[in-house]
Length: 458
Picture 1 (cartoon, one colour):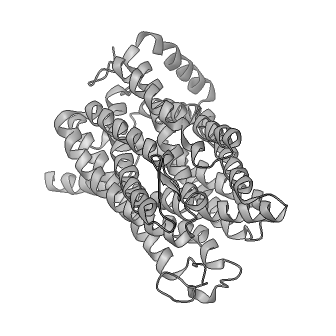
Picture 2: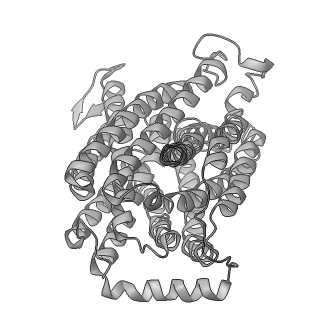
Picture 3: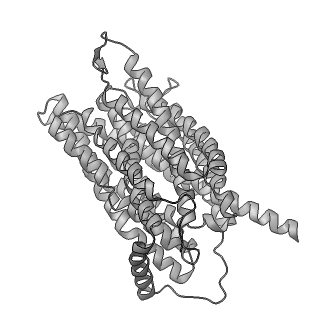
């Protein structure tokens, strides 16, 4: 009987890990390494066709992407805490996760219909937004299941391993896209083949297939999650109550004034996670607009970043288990600040003010290293942040607590893209437009001073 329970517990953990494996390609393929750069290149060519110069078109494309991701982030943030409270009032999470999974699949699949001539850019952005909202809202509910999987002391390693598995899944999905589908400038894939399934390279059908491919990947690999993960049994059935959800949410927000550690942590994570999301959203766009990389080059860059993310997330989980999440978060943020300074100090022509020879590979090599650090430390930062939130979550309402965590992670999600958009517009430079994320990281570090490593639930 004990062995049966042990196997059941292991299956539940593996099922929970499979959510990371299934959902990560949305971030790896769509946000950062395939669709984001593809959208930037299509938008740039479209604006140049409207009579803009290349630098102005680059800036306009980045501003459009920034505006769209800001609006999407605001929608995610506003809905997150209310949905979490509503789920806690009923005690059920799985039905919500299923519903958001439908949004994920529909939105991702819809990306196929964005044409490479730029005539329907907004259709691509709307489809992307629907899927991204589904992915982020589902994540809130799966995160809230973490405290029930193992003891609190083991959540750091469990969280890190989940992120590591997710990044490995994203890595495999990215490799498949690059080898068999995404076209280079020659119309061939990275293997030198025509895009699979007879896709038309001129219509960029191989690259556009990233949307349906991501949707199909999610459908297949969510099966273990839905088979092995169940809601906790309640003493008596409860119905979702909107009034109870609003009352609980209002009490949680009002209670922040008496819980300085939680309030400081929510504020801190709001800024440094926003900065990290800015790096994710604009890393591939930067490579496309500043370094003039093709989508396949950005994809190889993504492979390096995903490999580093998987390894670092696993190691970060080990360090989290030994030293706790707070020191891990601080170290990761400081190194990412250094990476940001490096990125904005580099172009095809110079590196930290020093001129480079024409055709120099230094910017490419340095950006590959930066990509590995962004991917690796980003994984560490997210896993450790999830663990520290577990230490601050209310045991009786974990989904609501993670809903607040989702709110602060997205309520100001417009800050990074909006500030990048403003800086890009003011400077006319896609490179200098990245600089506001440094300020966001620094604000996050300052607020961490008031965060207790063990949380403060009193």
